[in-house]
Length: 201
Image (cartoon, rainbow, N blue to C red; front, side, top):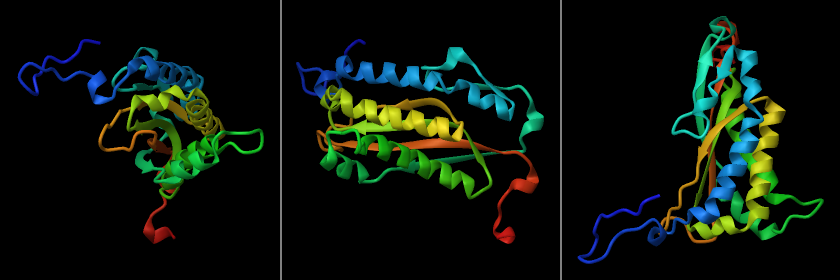
């Protein structure tokens, strides 16, 4: 990727590297995420959708409606893990019996799904948002692989497609060495009778 030529101070240039972004250590995470996410593609068939494979890894993930008779509504939610990643770091490294980053990843996904369920929606497609203070965070492969495996496991449990994600490096916003995990999900409500409203509770 080319460096920006936008000058901040005469004679200096803003670069990705200077902002804390290092794609050499981030790309293995992204490649592993896409491989695990691709294994979930068939889950959308049960709701009358089909993945458009060309869109995987692009700016937006695309599904095609195959059978519009299989759903009545779409629901959408965004949710964040909060500071539970700090607790997971306190328990790191993982062991055979304690897998903190695996579990907080499932926890974050579950918060998205739980919010969908309150409307009567079942999870169709999700995306992971994982922000760091420095790209150096991605040098710990054991930690990020546990997060990916947890998210993938949650997708399998709920039969939800993992569509995509985002991995911003937010220097000066997030403390170096820390991670902010969040996500989003869209769900399907099969029929008007399945919608959960205030008046029906």
